[in-house]
Image 1: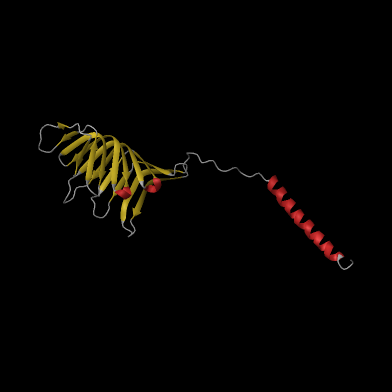
Image 2 (image 1 turned 180 degrees about the vertical axis):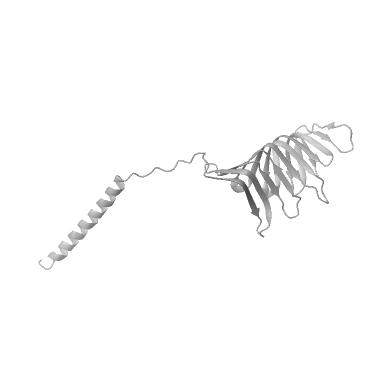
Length: 205
């Protein structure tokens, strides 16, 4: 028994040390105020003046460029609010397009740009294509798809021809243009516009 007594004392002291350590840790955690999780509100967490953002393809070629006089990022929507934006798309094998507006919101990890206020898209002319000019109060750009569309009234000018309607879609890769709703169409060379009641006007500009 005398031989075991030192071992029992050592075990007891070790147990008291473990219990004391646990109590001190628990007391410390209960006595320190822990900040509650941060509330995510619509407050900007980053911003910039006169910025330029460039996206490249897997080969490293610049295909999309967005710039503006000011940019703000909001964490609750993970969106960028841009003032006086200019969006340039230059995919290999497709004409260059340039979009401008008063304001824009870029979201969906940069896959969508919503241009609002005097929204204007131009497909620059080249040896094979005439100038294509689209105007609306709201245009949605899909830079990676080289696509633009709107569900609001839009005016489309393709060379000397014009189309006006509510809703349009233009695919710059296929050059397919669709103007929806009751659209007014004026074809180059005609003195008077023709009114169409078909739900869709499709052309290959």
